[in-house]
Image 1 (tube, rainbow, N blue to C red):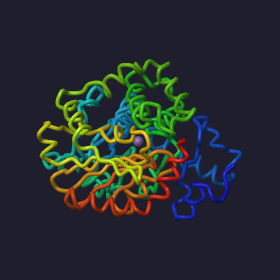
Image 2 (cartoon, helix red, strand yellow; image 1 turned 90 degrees about the horizontal axis):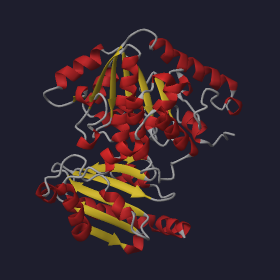
Image 3 (cartoon, rainbow, N blue to C red; image 1 turned 120 degrees about the horizontal axis):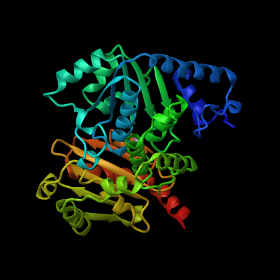
Length: 387
Ligand SMILES: [Mn+2]
């Protein structure tokens, strides 16, 4: 039963339009926990879904986009939804606000993705301006798509937002938003099922969606790996997703440079703050260049720090040349996203968040070491919870 202090009501009290909020916990979402939410909310919700269904009844020009530096959930949900909508007769263009790692290139439709750059900016603008529907996936604040954010905000299209991050911005005409979902791909699967189109999910679409669910649950290991996650991936495998192939493509296609870089980082760059149960890497731009680091090459590095026994918080600071990019990972109830959003211009999930600064690498690490002092009791508490 939802109580007045649940996320649902909290968000309503924050002033978001109730009509755009979708709450459900399992993929029997047709019923939308009908018995647990007030009837008037349920009716509004159904009307909203109707509006999207109506919008998609005729062929549309659709732009699908996702966040900066797309990961498997971002690109998997984008291409999963795009391939589905193409089957429905729509004309679909996927646009990413930046490049993404090569280990995602196997996904169906990858060759048609338009990547935003100075050269493609005008083309992107034209697609966004002429779109009848814009679907935004795996992010819910428009600055996550960089220069494209204002284009999307100003576009006349019917806007759809499907996401599982905290604190959404109110820009969409239809929002499927659930912070309890482990991944956006899980929500996309549920939406397609809700539309009565499960039969249109083919092997390629299933593999795109499987990839996002697999990575956003850390290979089905994180706390967000719910019963629903297993139910959805069981369905995707049943449809034909080759789960071993997806896992191999994403996790086990390292370049020699990347493996050597990880070896170097683990032996030379891993720092421990024992009193704070925290471990971190601070990697300079020169070090990245020495190993010819490409987009995606540092992905997963921070998890090695978190895998250390007795570590509650792990951080990767990466000198990007024009500032520092930060990845936070935590275990249990420790709010990595709070540190990211309060001090480092970022945000994310409780156990996986990101941030950035315009300071030097040293300044950023020093700031972190100051900030972390206030979190000592929480970090100690989480360590005790582990045992
Ligand atoms: Mn995600």
